[in-house]
Amino acid sequence: MNSFSHYEIWFVTGSQHLYGDEALQQVASHAEEIARGFDEDASIPVPVICQDTATTAEEIEKVCRRANSTPECLGLVFWMHTFSPAKMWIRGLSSLNKPFAHLHTQYNRDIPWESIDMDFMNLNQSAHGDREFGHIVSKMGMERTVIVGHWEDPSVREKLGRWSRAARALETSQTMKLARFGDNMRDVAVTEGDKVAAQMKLGCSVDGFGLGDLTEYVRAVSAGEADDLISLYAEIYQVDQALLSQEEGRKRLEDAASIEIGMRSFLEAGGYTAFTTTFENLHGLKQLPGLAVQRLMADGYGFGAEGDWKTAALTRMMKAAGEGLPGGTSFMEDYTYHLEPGNMMVMGAHMLEVCPTIAESAPSLEIHELGIGGKESPARLVFSASAGKALNASLVDMGDRFRLILNEVEAVTPPHELPRLPVARALWKPYPNLAVAAHAWILAGGAHHTVFSQALTSSDMEMFADMTGIECITIDEDTDIKRIKQELRWNQAVFS
Image (cartoon, rainbow, N blue to C red; front, top):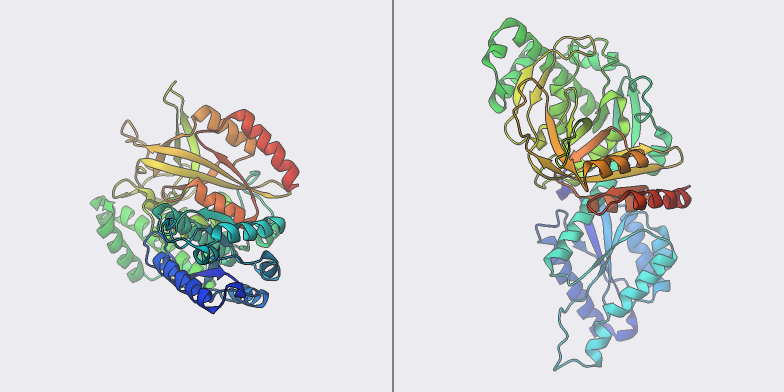
């Protein structure tokens, strides 16, 4: 998958010719220093490129249109060093189709009390210029992220870095191709959705394939290729030696390796970065793809089970945004509850397909009967997720709009061993508590499939929702049911 180094953020400073050439030279120098400081900061994962100071409507429109036609540009950061009359920005902003952040800062941190004069005031009037810019953006009804504070403040840089990750999620969505192997699980409502509307709103294209298209790639895998991959499995996972030496176990591993190689080849050949499977449509495959899906997700692919293409797309977007951050991101499902008073928890898992990037320790590679799907016992990685703050996210189609639902959670270490549960799993306490969180989730129409991320926060995904213009509901430690009901009613009026 692509890394952040292939992309750019453009830093654009606004001014005007009222103050003379010497002032504009200082503006340009300050802008270059700020952009360089951002570019060198590790909390901002994308190269930050300083653009020429924009002083006229023509220059503003030119940089906006150039950004539109530059695939590497994830978005722009606008800052008004001096006073930049906002009517100059209307034409350029009207043409802009990239996300932007409004940085409200100034070059100097402190007022120079002893030396300050009107020349200093005229040059350093972001307090004036950024309000003018903010007014026109609000009047035009444009979404943006506003970041306030001195440009050297670590919190400002951290927020700009998180914004750039949301912009990466948007770019990923707009260029994503998603392959569906088979259809969605029969009679299930939430995995359905309007694929045309998704492409119009989010940009991702969803293509369907029969299992025969995939099995051709699987059957083309040689015994030598499968053996080489099994050797890699033995190096990086805890593998029972009996699986490697006994004929039946070895055969199951060979089948799993062939499915992984074939599926990876299919996706690479078609330029697909996300995919779905369904256990109800496995014709031609000897086992449900479990290990293959887990390893592909670990490499950055999006995935959704039972044909859930919306969750597959969201997994890919969130993996792209979280690249390089501590913690992993995985397809997940709310599976069962622990309803002990005062200690309520959710056990998240799936039949097989949970990404090992969230694992607390090295996974074990095991083969067990699945009990569903009517196929041979599949290979899978077994582990528990690491403890710590995490996020559950669900993207659903409400019929007239898409809704992103977020729940902040605290993942915990299972208090007991789970010797008879041979699947990957995560255990968490949702905020503010399970009773309120589940109530709010159900009222919002959240799915049972989610994306579980240890890397991203609700703020990251709220910025993404702003960029795409989709509805977003956040369930956190401050949530109460009365507020959620009001928010859902208000949103119905706003988005319908």
